[in-house]
Figure 1: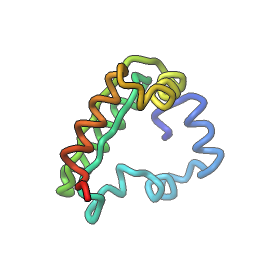
Figure 2 (figure 1 turned 90 degrees about the horizontal axis):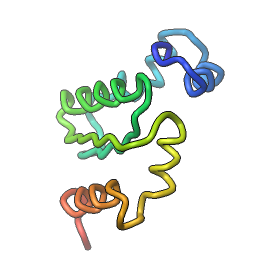
Figure 3 (figure 1 turned 30 degrees about the horizontal axis):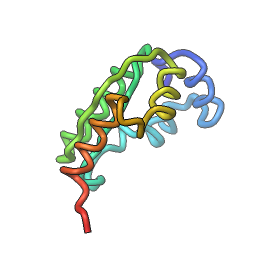
Figure 4 (figure 1 turned 120 degrees about the horizontal axis):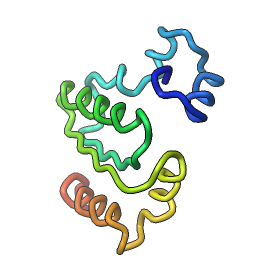
Length: 110
């Protein structure tokens, strides 16, 4: 959080403070050790600092034995994340195809 300045970081430090031990305690990357969900799909937009953090999160999950994959899409900053949220499910949006294919391989159908 502290190495990613901006509005999101401000909100996070407002919520959790700046104490490094507390920030590590709420960090997904610092808590990626097993046991985890058996697989993670991360859909991300371009954003200063956050792509690096997502890559580090995937690496931590994989080090813990968890299957994890990251896809980065067009869009900048917070608006890029909102675009993913608004367009996910639209069959012409590339993230939808990636999500559907991932779900077919990772989620058993009853």
